[in-house]
Length: 389
Image 1: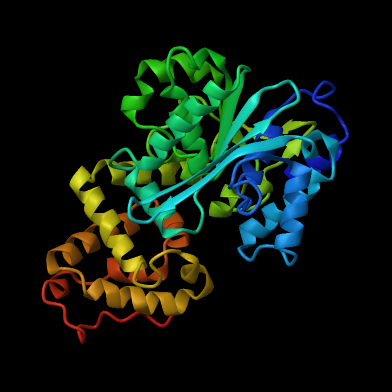
Image 2 (image 1 turned 90 degrees about the horizontal axis):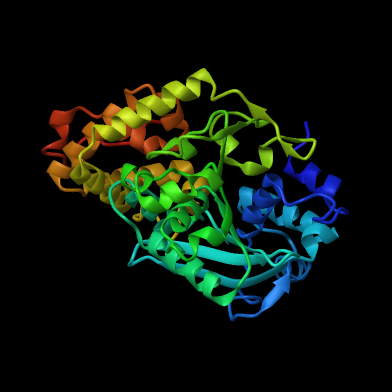
């Protein structure tokens, strides 16, 4: 089944005059922005996609180790091999990670042949700050949202042409949030906003003047088993894309199907996903803002006991990570242990159980199954040991 890579090979020799810029082109740019550009563009300046690939090939001759990044690495090579995207210029690269401020923000500008400035926002990477910020969005505004607003404003000030913006995962949310938050002078210049399986915006944003002004120019795409893209609120109109894989792996946009130059779309989400999303929404709605804050902080206190900067150990050594996370859970305050266990227990008991088991490390499932009375006086010999499965 043809996917985004096949689209690149099919259209690579065609100019944007022959084949106008499309949603698959937009998705391609939101994958390229994931590439590490430090050493090439972090000091300013500009480079084409072809020049970026030459830099990546020199700097990372063996490729990138993270499996999703490795796929994007070779995807960037394919884009660079053709004039359509290979000649597109990249500039204004910013990658700001601040663990203290719990923020991860990355963006760049792709300048298209007609002068359009396409602002691409990177989604969440493997930094702990990035994942913490994602969860923080469930109960408060986060620094990356403010940075996205300012970044788009700076791009608008620096160029006179039309603007487009987009992103995958959290990047899609930032594109939507930043576009809706622009001034009355900038919003009319925004021709299109793309969100690819990005978390939605809250009710306050959905009802604001800026969002109502740009909503007809928003294109939201989610795969048929989307979980990420259905978090928080969402744009009321979205298109469901067919993926060639299952479950949460559909968040990988390189599995999305493209046919005849457009995404292959479906009538709606599959039944299991609709039930999962309804269960997740109900679970979130039943949490107070204080609950969300406490749970987010507790989860990241547990995860940061493994590595204070990255979640990579969770991927590389899940068994060893679970032991250390359970040890960290024992060190939480008794009241926090009880509240976290109850919230996780409700989540694992909900209709979202199957997705949650795939998404969260096994240590959290073990915590969710602990008897509540035990947690109020837990000691290091309290039986909080990981199961052997």
